[in-house]
Length: 133
Image (cartoon, rainbow, N blue to C red; front, side, top):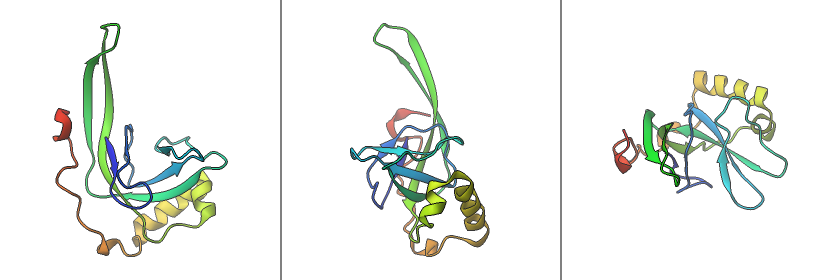
């Protein structure tokens, strides 16, 4: 499970299959949250986009369960915590995938402003929570 620890998406938990260092998170006009975690994901018209940075290491989990018909199912996911980027990238970088990737590369090389002022990742976020491993 991916948790958003602060910013506009504080308290939101999403099931994602990737946990990149930087992640775009969108809020739909209806108020629903989603993350643009897949390489081909792009924001839709009307969505508000926010940049987040992973806070600490990510981990992988496997969920083994039975569906309503009794069939055994499973899925793989990523577990990570994310913090809102204090100095948000320009709107053009958030909306365009190529510009977003360029911003990510630059931020990874030079650092994100005010990153040192962030609090450490809470101990409750991780694979041990919820019994998944």
